[in-house]
Length: 432
Image 1 (cartoon, rainbow, N blue to C red):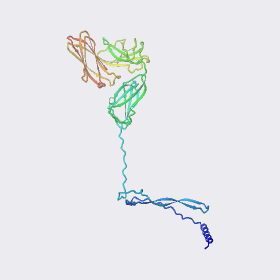
Image 2: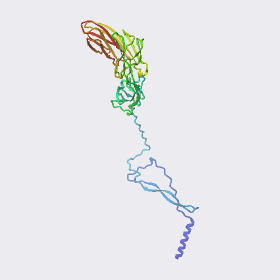
Image 3: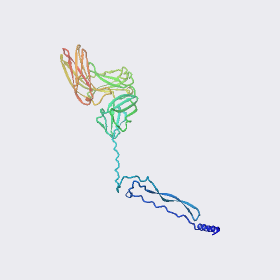
Image 4: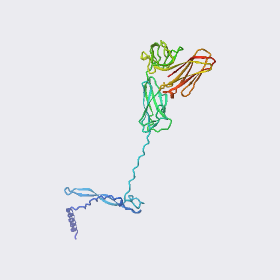
């Protein structure tokens, strides 16, 4: 066949193929296989490598008949390749059909802890500082090891064990206690209450153990108190005043004075001060009633002193005083003694800080060259001895301890004559 005939035959075959519109065959993507279950996994030999299938994207050119445009689309076909990292060497020969689930871990329960805090600082109606403490934690707090400290303008003014301000030994969660301190002050001051412990104590919050506030105390000015009651040589009542305020009280101030004996008003009058009452208890000022009030036997005496002008006294809570007087006449033979007994019921409260209730005994007699001895014996058998030679009166003061406050106790006073002649006089006992 000539070259020209071969060329014509090739062209005819080419045009015939183009007219039929032949396309490459289309292969649909394989359907996704279901994952093998645990029981279908074969135990592999140590040296086997398992081939895996991975879908590979193959571009396919498709020509649309209506537009004569070739469009490329993606087709996924499985491709087998070696993946030595997918199956690890296993030493297990048998796999159970089912594996029980592990029990869930239980979280460790938190230990309840207390949390002591100071929640309030204020004054009571008598202008005494009051502190409120609370346990805001979720565990009980032992009070025995805790101490409450009070600071005023950065200076410590009081320290109080919590075991002494409450009858309970534990402060339960969400429970609080209120403590009225004996502290009072005048003017504006920075007050801080802080609770501390000498033992290692874990709290929920160790940063809230104090409270600091600016508080306005009693106004500054004179503060007149009935400091004491006394008897003259004729056993007439005398009233002792003092100014514990910040400012002195000038002379010429009018006070209304009322005296009750065994619940009966025996005297009421106005008194004009004849001298200055100095600040900070700088002096004692004595008022003698214009009509004598004589004391004898057992007498419960109450005295109230109130200013006619309110500005003359900034605090009226301490303007009255109540005392019981017992007058014992005595005649003691030479080198002998005489004993006197009485009961004391002390009210269940304490005086201001630094002070305590006291029993006073005073022996008075006539003559010189006399030596007497007074012996005190109280409910707890305590004794105090005082000797005085050739002078009258002989005075003794015995404190009433906190354990005796609020209950009645029997006291005994003995007057002992140390000389060789008879002594006559009066024993004057004064108690709250």
